[in-house]
Length: 375
Image 1 (cartoon, rainbow, N blue to C red):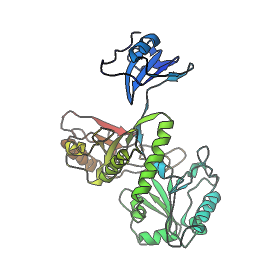
Image 2: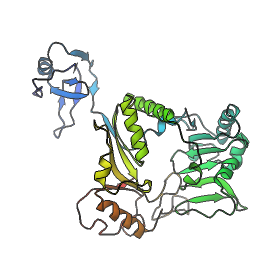
Image 3: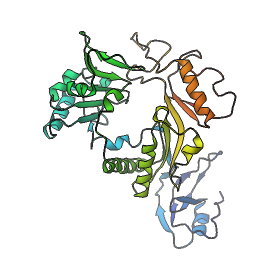
Image 4: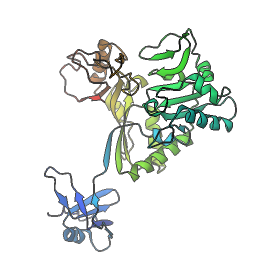
């Protein structure tokens, strides 16, 4: 293989040799060496040619037979949510990534947190998975009340599509026996008709009452998440849903040196995005590391929570999930955003062509543009 030529004005600061470089080109070719300068690849090819092109001052890294891959691209992600877990939110994940194996362990973790939290302050957790807990069910408000009745408690399911509130949190949110079912979501109830604490999809009924993380907490979450992603080889992430404040935070983190990977921030359809994609593109960072992407529309929920809308019932269940809105309403939203020049990404599950999750024919008016079905 012939090495790519370096521009005369550039010199590599690092050369990687004695390994296998996967180029990912159309032919599937591999190379012996790689030369880079800062965050740019300058040459790929035979070791002798790359060394010569790089010059004598470049640092030489011996790969000792290891393989170099291009950076991983996280095509559907929720960066920097992981950065909050275990620091500002209790980590309630089950093995192999956490330690929660039962509802009793979840309660104990919440009780320990309550012991060091002033009464009245919120306690938040994330990551519990009913399918991996010994009881094989969601915790309820009565379970969480055993951890504390002096603190409002909110824990989010690992899917991000369900959550559980204790009695104090339900009271803070104004959710009572008489609260009607929200559009596109469910307030689960016990045999007496009282809310049992589990909320499906319409999590904002509770989350809008949670305290906002401070700027420094948000920056710490980005920094922590960024380090974890880099350690695992992720160099670009596409964040499925957000708003202008999220873009501002990412740009701030980039300016402070906390963000080293590239982020494409989708904008949630309900977050009041700009009328046109061109206007949204103006939010990007000057160096291009942070930029906006598609409009993200949620049309159904989670397969884990049985809220994802299917054309047939789930295995060993009579549930099929439900749509967030009628098919015609979804179609009108897609038309509006498409006219604004946006790519539209719709979260939906597989269904037949007349399924309520599918956009009606002609939604884009025959105009060119990319659409995506998420999940």
